[in-house]
Image (cartoon, rainbow, N blue to C red; front, side, top):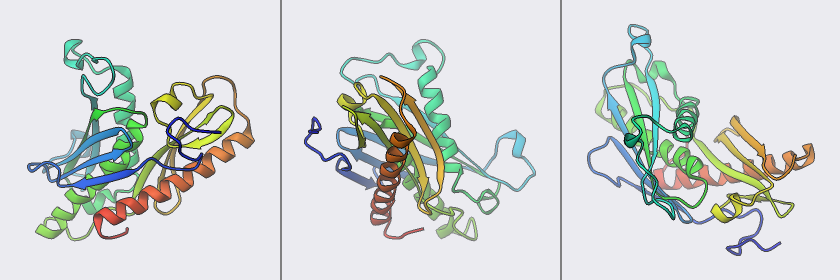
Length: 241
């Protein structure tokens, strides 16, 4: 089976992480996965949500947005409807859950880190790129807290990355671009830690139901893809968690 861009079924698109992409945020990264590009920024605040006040625990949350011309046609800004669209709300909850899965909130202390993920160009896999790049932005912010003496130790317990997998023309493939995603028989997102643990698996039969055997092939591809992305994170960070 020939994929539209010539990749083999188990190949990732080229991945590039540019750290320090913006100057004001405590952590910032531009992640590029093929044609998908997301700016991830991490902002530290010395406060927590009200439900955590006095607990000694910190919080990590995320926001996600797609710029109007990140896609082939202009997407209206959410501010026009005075509310976040359902897709963006679901994605930012996923990003937040994924990042919190590798945070020792007691070590973070009573502060909040917000990771903003802004898609400037979309070609499939924007939520997965946001998680993978968002982790590195979070790591930069946490490293700054450790280096400044604000906290005693790195509060991150592992790395976390995400990748899409799917069944395209009856074959399991890794890291779908938009052309593949829009015609996939099944579409899944796999979120994993650098320890090989699953954080979340989202899967849907789009063209038809898929079998247990196909799911196993998709999970195997997802594990390999997440491991490769964690290695790309480590290379950009200069260290491995």
